Image (cartoon, rainbow, N blue to C red; front, side, top):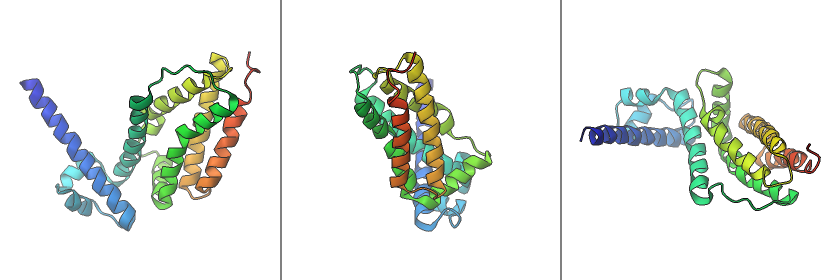
Length: 205
């Protein structure tokens, strides 16, 4: 019974957190990050300002919004596909599969460049940690490495290729966030990096 009560409280906290993030995202997108206040978010979410602040200040809320969405994409892919497919991939198929993994994130950043720019600025300031460099990094690296391991790259080549793609992905997201690259240009540049990695098949020792 005690465990049930603890779980219930934890579930309620998570429900409240998601409601706060939902209200924050809607207000940030509708009236701008700078114009939105903690009080407005609290009113929209139907909670106190103290409850909102327990989730985080505006910068922390913004980071959590992006991280939560990215995490949901990863979890959805794990549930739907898993990682057990070992079917070999040609370079062209591998390039397409890698782009399919990353394109949703590029699209999300391009959806609202002003908000993405604010997110990138928070990350650069280093005042709030993002899971994009921690747990979410591990999830994407694992997905990329699993795909590359289905090509003729060696295990070492697949691991280093996954890291190359991951860091290129981060750089492109931040560049899109700052408005220096549009969605089409971002996809084209990432394709170049993908081909640089997968077209080296058979050359790894």
